Amino acid sequence: MSNQTEIRHLKYFLAVAEELHFRKAAEKLFISQPGLSRQIKQLEDDLGVTLFERSNKKVALTKAGFYLKKEITLTLKNLESVFEHTKLIDQGVEGEINLGYVGSAMQFVIPDLLIKAKEKYKNIQFSLKEMENPEQIEALLSQEIDLAFVRMDKVPRELKIQPIFEDTFSLVLPKDHPIDVHNFESLTQFKNEAFIFFEQSYSPDYFEKVMDIFKESGFSPIVSHNSVHASTIYKLVENKLGISIVPTVLKNGFNMDIKFIELDKIAQRTILSVAWNTKNRNPMLKNMLEFIL
Image: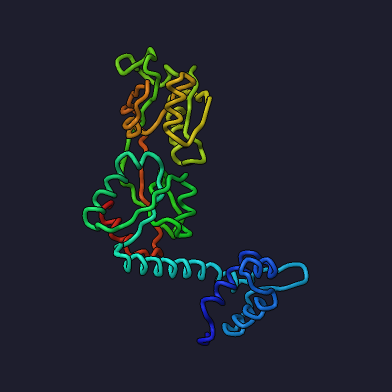
């Protein structure tokens, strides 16, 4: 490759690779279509490869083009991160970390991390976003977030995952429900009651583990509602629209007319893990992992 290739050529290439349409890409970039075509041709000549298959009906990436799109997307993302951290350092900020998390991680794991990080790095900035597990994985792969706190067992090979907290499950009942910790015997006592669960899409691995609890109890639950927020589930339970099963850690921080029965005698446990992208170049990522692992 000669020294004629500039960052703008790569950005132009990505625009066409994403749109697969020269006119739409040109409009997106606010340049003329002939001008964009010349820039792409210059990039192809510079690299000595064909990046697009062109016809009157469509534009498609070649194998070389597909590879370049994948690598350049990550490269430009890293470059943007370098520029952003350069600005932060100039402003007196030591770094920035973007966190994705499932709601239960906010009970103690994330607050503990923020406190420890702030003690050592006074000027670090955090961006926090509650996300479904699959959404967090996509955000890690695209490096939109640096750390993900998830309830899942496996991740794509580009990522690493490490369990950080094992928890029991607990039943959630209206406060005046006739069954409590003193007369609770087994889950079969609730086989005729409606259950409220976290959405399956929120955490497929977690949902499957909850279903295993019922399978071992010998019945399938009657499902009345689904939600992605514990507060919504608890409000429904409080209003006697069903009962639920949640990670025990979620019994803290809610002031509602509900009660919990910990299922500490069953084999199933729910695992909270931290995941990250090994290609992430954020200089603060390693420091945050040292607080967690």
